[in-house]
Structures are given as structure tokens and as C-alpha cells.
Amino acid sequence: MAEALPQSDKLHVFVSYSRDDLGFADQLVEGLELTGFAPTIDRHGISGGEAWEKRLGTLIREADTVVFVLSPASAVSKICTWEVDEAARLNKRILPVLPCALGDVGAPQTLKDLNYIFFYDEPKLPGSGFGSGLRRLVNALNTDLDWLREHTRLLARAFEWEAAGRPGNRLLSGGDINDAKAWAALRPREAPPLTGLHLDFIRASEAAEEARASTERRQLEEMARAQAERANALKEAERALDLAAEAQARRIRLRNAALAAVTLVAVIAGWQAWRAEGQRKEVRDLLGRAIGLINTSELLRQTALDADTTETILGIAEKGSALGDAAAMAMLGNLYLYDLKGVAPDHSKGVLWLERAASEGDAGAMFSLGVTFYSGKGAPRNHEKSLSWFLKAAAAGNVGAMALLGETYAHGTGVPQDYQHARVWWSKVVNAYEGKALREERSETRHGGKPGKKTARTLITISWYALVATDFSRALTIGERAHALFPEDLPVESNRAHALMLLGRADEARAIYLAHKGKPASENANKLWERAIVDDFVKLRKAGITHDQMAEIEREFGVAATGR
Image (tube, rainbow, N blue to C red; front, side, top):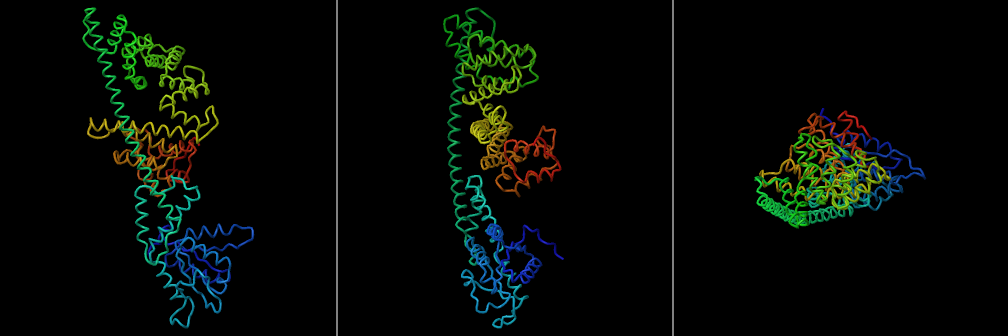
């Protein structure tokens, strides 16, 4: 005996009937199940206070075909007439079957032009009866089967979009739009037409995709402009260092020093000579540009930093701070807040220097102060102050502050929990990082022939923040771009799977989730893919994002979610 098809692969048939014909309807359902279909029959009674229209309307909407048991009783039933009219409104294929002769009773207007299938011995049709009727019905049901399934699937998605207020994140995207247009164009002659909602859904998806593409083109143009501005800024910084080197040479000539290498420490000595010559303001400008080229946070995260290096950095920061440079003050404040070799920690002094730098407009210092008051390291924990500094840093363009503001509002840390406010900040992070990703991709391609780890990490970051900002289409677009560049990178794959799940493409998401079971979550990870995915679900829930498939995947993995 052939193995039965899964329920999801069978044609879904709703059987509409009068209660007087229940016996025939039950036999018809048995016959349809035996011939490989998935029939649905409503056996609930209709009571005055019951929302029967909603229940029956859902069953009709989810069906691929409506089989109407046309009898003297159903022909005059208001409920049955409503079911036929609802099926017609949704442009469902309707197949009328007759268990007995109608006599003098007229069929509902909607059915008058349709071909009837006789399940009784009709004298005008020799050989008619239940068996021949079932055969004709099966043949009719198997006609245009795949096209009808897609009619039902797209209508279901269109109804979800309509019920949610027609949001952009419920629309079709990418190749799905072309597939839907091709499906609509290939409608078989006898198949039911598309509904107005079908057409609205496809047209809105196409318009949104065009708008997205236009936005992406504008963003690429803006990124290109930002890249050009960055290149000009770097040229100016290089010129500043060249001028500082000239100052160093002048100092050498004046003092007959034997120093040949131009280092940052030598540059600072050169500044002192310039200051002695009455050019203190210009020297301070040069110092600010030179110090600005140093990424303090990355330097301080290098745990192998030796005492000589930190002492050199400390000397630079102290001399720059003495000249009133904000970047040098911020560097000095951070040095005192970290437990580094060669620098005695002094939290009070660190906070003081950060405050001085922040008063000069240094966004990095504002962010460091926010972290200090947020974590309680270096100063008593104070959420009001941390929020204030994060807001100032974000206003000055600090992306780290934008990200932490999102977490602050999502978790309700010192403020009322507000997911909408959190998503506004996370959207700003996405916008800020997209330019960075483009610059890194171009730089790594120019030097290594192809994008590398920096580009991958930034794309992963962008797609994640797009997810928590509930911009699922954008998260998927970025994830697919990252996948094209790094198809074996599992953190890229996890964000793609999350985006597909949250866009309602559960089967595609499930395929990715299950494809990598048992693998390390990333190149240097000490946990498996399953644990990483479940940990992501915890973070999404903390960001106010839930989906039924999360629990399903957790059960499939056998990994319990913690921290809900």
C-alpha cells in the first residue's frame, strides 16, 4: 500500500452541507480521505450567540476547493447559501455535488452556471451513482491542483497582511514577488480568478520592493559620499602628521638631537617646540587630529598590552591633555579606569578626565561615562546619569551609545520599559553601521582581493540590530548579502534563519535551523549551534520579539531556554 501523503501536501477540501444531509456528507468525507484528499467538515451546531460566520469563514478561506452538497434542504438553507456566497467572494473553486434530485427546488444563484456532479441514479445520465460521482469529483479535484494550493497560500498571507493593518514586513520580497506574478499570469482557464486582496497584496509587495531598492540605491550613494568624506579626512590627518613631522625636524635642528624616527612621542616633543615658538593653537589642532587616529577602546581591549606600551600611551595622553586636547583627555580617563600594566588605576581621576573630555564635546568620553555609571565601575551606579550621558553620546554620533540606549529601554533599566523607543535606537545603529560595512568591504577587497572578517562581523551586527528593530525584511536583505559573501559563516546563517522565521517563512527558517545541528556556533565558539540559536531566542524575547516557532525549535534541539 502506498504511503499516505503528509496532510500539508494534500488538497484541502471544505464540505458544505445541510444538517439534513449529514449521513451523505460523512460518506463523502470518507471517500475523499480514501482517495488522498484532506477534507474538512463542520459538525458544530449553529447557535444564536455564536460567531459562526468567523468560524466557517476561516474554514472556507483555508480550503483549496469547496464541495457543496446541493440538496432540497441545502438549497433553501440560509447558512448554506451564505457559505456558497463566501466561497464565491473569496474566488474559491466550488464543485456542487447532488446526493438526490432537487425536484422543484431551485439552486442558489451562485451555483446555477456550474456543472453538477450526480451521486444518485439520475435517469437522464445512465451509469450515474455514488461510485461514478466520486470518480468524477476526484478527477475534478485533481485538476489544477498546484495552482489552487498557491491560490490558498497567497490568500492566507494576504489576509494576515490585511488583518495586521497592511504593514510592510508582512509583504512578499525578492524572488517571491516574481513567483507570485508568474503564478497569477499562468492561471488555468477553468481555475477561479484572483481576489482583489490577492492583487492588492502582490502590487503592494512589488511597490515596497521598488521602494526598498530605491532606498538602498540612495543609501549606497550616501555611503559613497561618506567614504569620500572619510578619505578627505584621512588625507587631512596625514597632512597633520606630516606637518608635525616637520616640527620634529625643526626641533632636531634647534637642539641638535640625535632622534631620527618620527613616533607619536616625538611628535608631542615637536609640539612643545612649536608652542615655544608661539604656535600653540596650531599645535593643539595637530595633536587633536593625531590622537583622533588612535582607537583607544581597541588598544585597551588588547590584554597582552605590555607595561612599556601603556606607559608610552599614558605619556602621550598626559602631554596631549596638558595642551587641552579632548581626545587625549578621553584616552587618559579610560587608562585610569582600566586595570593595565604600567598604569596605576585611579577611578576618581579617570571619571574627572572623562568629564573634562566630554565637556569639550568628545563623544567617546560621553559614552565611557555612560558605561561607568551604568556598570558601577569607577563611580556609584546611577541610571539617571548613565542615560543622560548615553543620550549625549548618541546625539554626537556614538553608535555604542545608540545600542545601549536600545537595551536600556528594552530592559527597562532605570526607565519605563518601552520596546518602541528601543527599536528607534536600534534602527539608528543599523543606519550607522551600513556605511561602515561598505567601507570595510571595499578596503578588504582592495587589500586582500575579497571581503574578510571585518566585513562579516559588521554585516552580522547590522542584521542582528535590524532584527531587534523589527525591520525583518532589511535583516533578511543584509543576511542574504552576507550569505553571498560568506556562505559557510554560521552567525550569518543564524540571523538569516531568524529573519525568515519572523517574516512568516517558517519552512525556510526551519531548514536552516536544522541544517547545522551539532556544529560549533562559530570559528572560535565553545558552544554548539543549538545553544547559540536558543541564546538568540532569549535575546529576541528580551527585545519584545516572540514567535511560535521558537518553542518548536527549542523542543527539536532539546535545549532549554533560560533567562525568559
